[in-house]
Amino acid sequence: MEFNLESPDAYASLRINNFRRFIIARFLLTFAIQMQSVIVGWQVYALTHDALSLGLIGIAEVVPFFCVALFAGHAADIINRKKIIQASNLVYFICAATLFLISTSFRPILSTFGVIPIYLVIFITGIARGFMSPAQTAFAAQLVPRELFGNASTWSSIAWQTAEITGPAIGGLVYGFFGIGSAYSLVIIFSAMGLTFYSFIKNQPLPERNKQENIWQSLSAGIKFVFENQVLLSAITLDMFAVFFGGVLCVLPIFADQVFHTGAKGLGFLRAAPAAGAITMSVIQTHWPLFKKAGRNLFIGVFIFGVSIIMFAFSKNFYLALIILMIGGMADNISVVIRATIIQLYTPNEMRGRVASVNGIFIGSSNELGSFESGLAAKLMGLIPSVIFGGSMTIATVAAVRKFAPILRKLKM
Image (cartoon, rainbow, N blue to C red; front, side, top):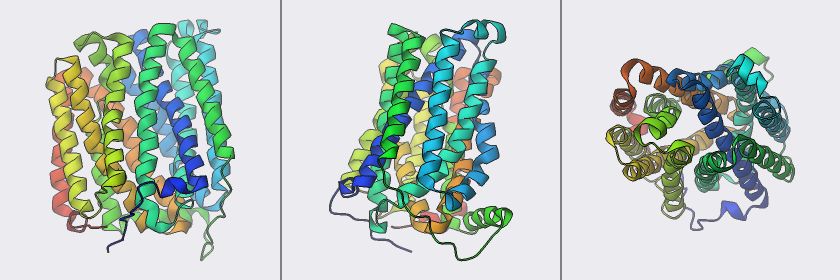
């Protein structure tokens, strides 16, 4: 199956008011979330100096996410998607305010209970993320015509990656120069701004469903749809294992402290480097899309990502490490945009919430499980060997999926 995604106008989707507001809102909330992630990471490491404690941050978020994801996808197909997004954003705002309070006015809580209160707050954000993700994916697809899905996916990636580059950098810098209270204050402000901009987007009607299903039939239908479609399943599987084994974000605080000796400020730049590469590639893809040989390009992107992880493990120079992380971010962005477009194109509107939730379980949970794997591997194998192992497993995943998914390998869009 081939689709004509070659839009002559690189800014076509941005000319649609609702989608432009969506991109702004997504940027603001993602900026807040990415700021919070680097602040929490450095805060937990400062309190524990333990790699496994960093990995447990991911577990604290992925467990609730995993538990609610399928139900959240079902909800996104039967409940107003904009309201789900707004409610989830509100929870993020409340959680950011809670982290601010226990880190400033109620700091004795951390002295008494250690990092457990932080994990509890992250647990709640995991629930919010579980509902936000499928609703956001399904809602975005309703804001642009089908022929602009590829262009919209690219701009959505730009918004997300721009937030990922600026959020950690500013989070680390504000934390380093002005302290944790100021850092969490910015998270609260940007969460509130994101909630405000989401309210400016017009409601979109829920898709009509051809048959009545109970909740269990609805959930199983979403799972069955993904597992019976080789293109969807193999694209999701490829990204899942690449993210699970190849992520180094969890252990970047250790690199910043023990390898590069840069502290929180350097951590912000390390966290921002992959997103700097990703946003560069996103801009390139808005003008020169990579959909004509989408399958081949998807495999190439993930392969280069795996190689970059191994190269990063051997880097001893801070600036060289930033360049390597940028290259990895560029490669990763290729797979992100292509996979997101595949999901939008191959999924009927009435199933987008459920398919997005299955994708979220594969990809979203693998981010946090990958963080746990990175923290655990670093503790058991040592920092450098664990990162080399992760990059090697990513390359092995590319070889395995390429062999067993010929339709994806030959995919053109």
